[in-house]
Length: 401
Ligand SMILES: Cc1cc2nc3c(=O)[nH]c(=O)nc-3n(C[C@H](O)[C@H](O)[C@H](O)COP(=O)(O)OP(=O)(O)OC[C@H]3O[C@@H](n4cnc5c(N)ncnc54)[C@H](O)[C@@H]3O)c2cc1C
Image (tube, rainbow, N blue to C red):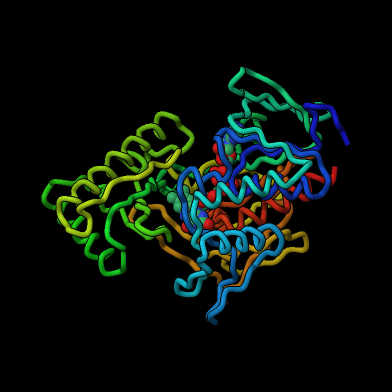
């Protein structure tokens, strides 16, 4: 194993759910590991975009009682989050979900990476170029300018399959109208406690506001949920992503910029309007914006195997499976709420290691929402419980070199 200052055994690009799991797992295998993240904290969509529920941690079951689907890192994250929030799994129909608080996620991630002697985390580091010689050469734009490091093996946990683009390798993305729609999530404080009745009433007031011409039509995509902390709720605004469905491009900075500004504009208008409309909302104010809007789907790798929606529906299993996908396919192709498709018999699906291995490129593994799956299967595997599991597997494999 290489020990020089800027040479590592494993480099993990992106510190979301998948990258965190990959980096901690690789370090625990004894590999000298670096985790590169462009933001100032870990967690990706689960912290920077304020997504506040872990899905895909548990098997789908008719019977009550949550049963973990993947042992190791996903189980450890569940345990730590339950200890931090005091909230256990919650039943929603046939699935169990775990409420998570982004503030706790950031703190838990800090604790996890700080405990690993073999792991170095570099925040404010954007990977801008990659090439493969004998080892991987990785160019980073940091605050002091460009720098470079080398690593024997690489994990792409960037969410957007950035490494595929930087290498000019095969990747795929469905046409804009079929892409899962984005959402803008923000924190609200100062209102009276939110219960189911008030949530329904609030939806009614928003419709009233739109009919009266006081609120934009996009306000229809907004719903509110308690955060689990006293006096705090999250607003989730599902958006089309552009004036027309075909205008949404999650890889285009101009499109994302419009989305960020539009999310804040609609969120502000609705909270101001509700504060005028109802006693419950009179003192409410927006307490925090996300670091970034939430992107559910973008570019994916094409690996040695492409897991399909049919695999998920049939609950197919594979000899080389490294994790189980247990979340129903959750389609969000419009901003009007989810459409769920459950696997036959509620069976879990195996995720083969081949989905984490880009075809024809050695010492490279992929983890998280951009692994090699089709659009339908991505609607299942993108959830954070499954990202922890694919991250864990990618870290374990990358550490073997
Ligand atoms: C609105 C919304 C609602 C959702 N709801 C749920 C839910 O209820 N439950 C659930 O479990 N899942 C949910 N999801 C899905 C889930 O949050 C994501 O799919 C998951 O968090 C993806 O994890 P990831 O690690 O693959 O990628 P990401 O979380 O996107 O992390 C990728 C990381 O890589 C970093 N990065 C990217 N490129 C570079 C680079 N070049 N250099 C350095 N760093 C880089 C990014 O900054 C980021 O931190 C939701 C998603 C959205 C958007």
